[in-house]
Image (cartoon, helix red, strand yellow):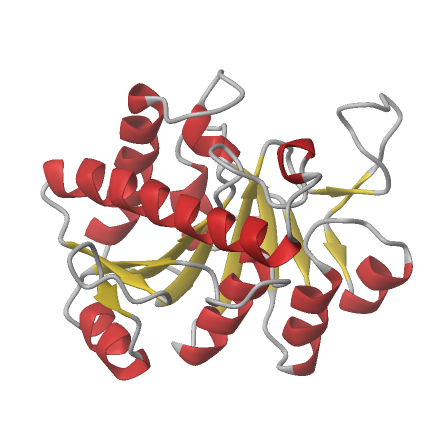
Length: 235
């Protein structure tokens, strides 16, 4: 039995690039869609927010001499490209999917309307929320938190390249220690860098738990949905 009925899955844009550093790897997207489809077929309602870092990162070197607002808008448009790629892969697997964009682009995606999004979820459609919050200076982590709260998701599932939350970067330090559970306050106080501080604070204020888990292990999205003790729970 799934532990959660409605989940907001947060994916980084880098996931879409696979082994490459940028762009979209069709094989990786197909594999990811297969994992997501398995969860949807189990009857779990799924909202997804995908980052845009594989195409454009507003705070990166590429945007160094660029106006921050312009760079952030470019990053939001990158999330739309990723969302459409994921939608295509899911629909090829027979999973009904809707892309809803916070930035209006009616030829490409539905506008984000909260009640309509909830209706899609209730009808068994996966909803991919694109375009961030439509506001600059907010990350896709914050967008994911906002959407999770609006659709009344029971948890935010943050998919990463590592197994959970560590006291320091496990990709750089071999002696990094992983937490099984950690409080919002510890994440903020120790600057653990799992999600943006504003996103963690929003989760804390609204008592929305976060689970951080490794996406590169096949089947982990399903395990997390079933409530298996994988990754780190922030509560």
